[in-house]
Image: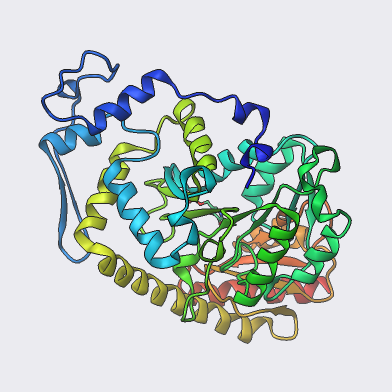
Length: 425
Ligand code: PMP
C-alpha cells in the first residue's frame, strides 16, 4: 500500500516532538537512569496520595506509591506500555488480523490509545481528508462524524443501505464512475475512504453481515480506498457468534479500526484505541503529541490495572453481563413499541448497541413533533434529521435509546408519543 497518497500535507509534515520522545525513553528506562531532561513536574508536590477504586464484585484497584505517582504524570503519546500490550493481545485474539505479521512499512498492525474513540476518529479524518476529497458513508450516520467531516470541506457520498447495512452493489455502482487504475492519480479524486459503524449502527441499530463485509472489502481493494471501521458497539452484540470484523479480513493493511471502552467500562474515563497499519497509526500518534499529548494517564493506569486483574477471560465475562443488561433493555423498549406504536410506526429489531430507529408513518417531518410537542410532554428523543448529511431535509425517523430508562418509563414515553402522533395525523 502506498500510504503517503492518503495523507494530507499537514499530516505528512508532522515530525516527532523532541520533548515527547524523551518521555517515551523515560517510560522504558531502568530505575538507575538519572534524568535531568524531561519537563515533567515533581509528583511529590501533587496533592493526591492514594486511590482505591472498588469494583462491583468487591475487589479493588489500588493506586498508591510509585504507581500513583505514575498515574498522575505525563506518559507516552501512544499509550502506557502495559495497556498497549494488553490491547494488542486482545486485538489478536478477537480479530487475528493478517497484518500482525507484516513488516512495519507494509502495514503491520499497530495500535494507539486515544481519549475516547471520538478523539482517535477526529485525528484519523484530519490525517486523511483534504477539502474536495471524496468520502463514502451510508446515511443515516453517527452525527459526531458529520461534525468532523463537514468542516473539512470534503464531498460526502452516500452509499445506499438497508437493515443489513451498506449494500455492496450500491458501493460498486458509485465506484464505477472511476477506473480502478485511476486511484493513484490525484487528479481523478477517487474516494479515499469508506466510514462505517458495522455493529449496532448509531442511529439504526443495524449490523453489517459478514458476506457484505467481504464484498465491501473487495471493492475497497479494487479501488484502493481505506475502510474506517468505527465499532464502539462491538462489545454490545446480541447474537453469537460475533461477526468477523473488517480488521480480521484486512490482508492489505487498509483498515483503520476504532474501539471504545465507553460502552462497557466507562464513558467518562475517555479511553478508546485505534488499530491499523503502522505508518498511519504513527501519524495519529504524532498528532496526539501536539494536541492532547496522551489520553489521561490516570484513566489508562486504572483501566490497565483492572484489565490485568481480570485477564481476557474476566473482561469478556464482564462484557457478557453488559450485553445481558442491554438485551433486557432492548426487549423492554421493543415491547413498549409493540404495545403503543404498532400501526403508527415501523422499526427493525436492533442487532447490537443501544438504539431503536423508528419511522413514524404518515408524517413527513417529525422534527417539530419531537422538538416541541414531545418535550412539552416530557419525552426526549433524537429527531432523525440530525443523522443525515443534509440535516435540514425533513425526516420521518427518530432515535430512541434503551440504555437508561426503566421499562415503565419506556412504556410511558411511547404511550405519550402515540397520543401525539395520533393528534398530528
Ligand atoms: N462512534 C460512534 C458510532 C458512537 O456512537 C460514539 C459515541 N456516541 C463514538 C464513536 C464516540 O465514542 P467515545 O469517544 O466515547 O469512545
